[in-house]
Length: 118
Image 1 (spheres, rainbow, N blue to C red):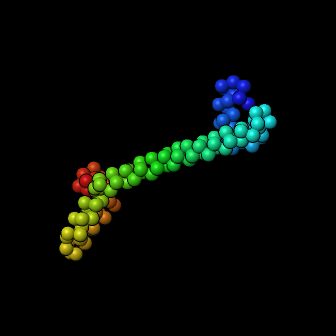
Image 2 (image 1 turned 90 degrees about the horizontal axis):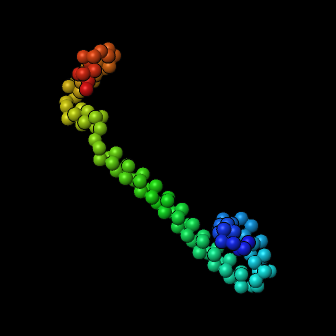
Image 3 (image 1 turned 30 degrees about the vertical axis):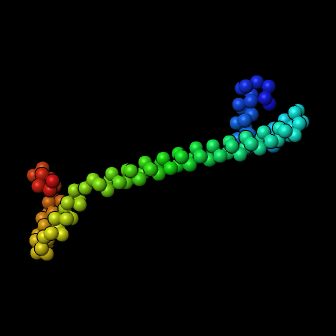
């Protein structure tokens, strides 16, 4: 399994993925002795630690990116926000007139009405 550098890398990758790694360890123990088991256990512990950290860093990076996107969206005021704020500031009588006018403008969309809505 470790006859060349390329096969050594492939074997370590196989051990890190957990694919039949115990068979590779037993083959290495038969070829070199019981000390090979120490090597494989160290490779498993250290390798799994690095793989876990890699996955967690990717996950945390995506969470951070999503959090920044949400903050950006919350900071940017929308047209609906301004309309609702203006609607809150008006009296009840004028609210009715505003809503009636908006309903009228939306039911008959023309170029002039679209400009008035915007």
